[in-house]
Length: 321
Image (cartoon, rainbow, N blue to C red; front, top):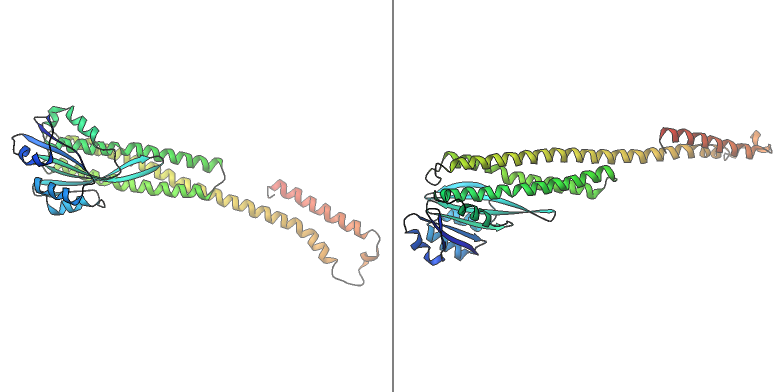
């Protein structure tokens, strides 16, 4: 459940710190810690609450993986909820990352699907001048990594759309294609719901909470907001193409049904000729002049065949059959 716990002083890593030594480490001047957790149990969260003096409501939210993206301030710490998304095969897996950020610590609690925060930690340690400004830069690196992981997910969804679009135009419309389009639309909506609150979170971090975010770090959150807007534009474009593809799919299905109806109507018209003639001669009248004529049968059959062929040729030219 404990991924890693590292202390930092003046932007330099002090190495791993055991959980029971955290209170002593936090008493050292200029030292702050970065603790990463993955799906911790209630007992561990209780210890973390005691060590970092976290608010009970924030800890209660962190224990559950069903929170909306948000930022809240509880006394001496910030509490953030971010949704993560990764592409597993052709499916999008969503998770949550909860972050406690104080002046001397940053604690991350991950639930569900995510790639971990190792790259964010390595990036921070490679920039000691920025890391020396406190946990605010680590918070930026975490958020930036989560936002960057949205782009491969969006590209994967766009590739799925390209396959479905090709199936619409090269194959006959099918229920599986339509189901794939609806599933893709639902995942785009979930991805949109995950990223849009981050714009407000970044704006709030740039304007407020000065006690937690160094003034030189605030400008970095503007870069995250720009990334989010670019991804959102890609989502909107894909959604518009998706809606158009669904309309085209339904149009093709309507056209196909019309072709079937036209074919049935054409054959019905052809069959109407012999039906009318044969029903005429089945009326059992005694005095019908054609009944005693020796050539009546071949003449009637010939007229039926010729009339049917002429009507078939005509309908064929019109594309009805």
